[in-house]
Image 1 (cartoon, helix red, strand yellow):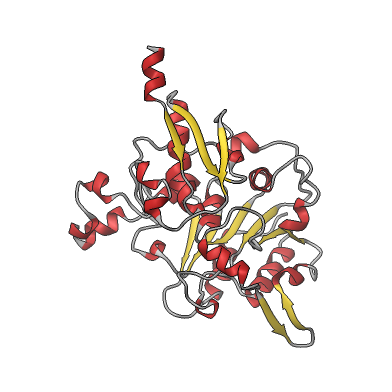
Image 2: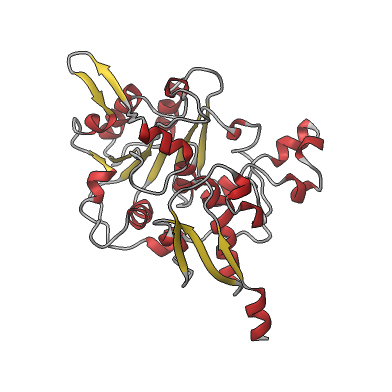
Length: 327
């Protein structure tokens, strides 16, 4: 029997973009682990904390790839993050009616899919927070080869200011995260952003040009996550620090994408701003069978913003509904 189990064991080898690894790869690996079928994981640099349950993790890849056919996803039960229509309905997505497509958006094959309990595993006294804390997860990257001016998936300086003011007024501490693309293994979009030295800035009247990182310094209760990490980098890698920190906070405000998926793992309220991507498809975020709701235990508060310009006020309005003053 042991020889048969050893024969059936699977080695995971994958380096897709971060969101796809969080959704398609890691839950499958954890399901294999639970069933005694996980042999080894070969993943990207600094991803070992996400596979804490596996004794043999090789951090091999220096780059992620957006090419799904070369990323290892082809060997997963779910080969694409946005749906698995063929397994769920028995039909190709293009053969479904509009109503059928709406019902399958964001829905995967969950027969070999179990998200690891990061909240349970990484909760503890290692990271202490003196106030109720929310993480604001931002991004500002080139996408699909388009100029950065065409990017919609971010919070601008004015919106960040409004968020910081609101959370300050209701008694929250804010930990602000926008990767500068030196913290972890990159995909092609992130690498292009880094190579072009792109940063998020605004010309503020009476102050001049400031970055989002500069803005944090104007608030006593706002901390840049990279500054926060400096106090913990001796015992923890960046990703283990993230997992421990996110297990300790009270909620999240995020754009969609890999960072947003990570926020969804911790079963805390997540205000998710979606101005771009397949997540705008009907029912993608609201369907109870969507992977986002399965990860978050139905704690996603979506802000859909279709069109060619951002309406960030919709995010502020949703934040005020979800996060109330702490007494």
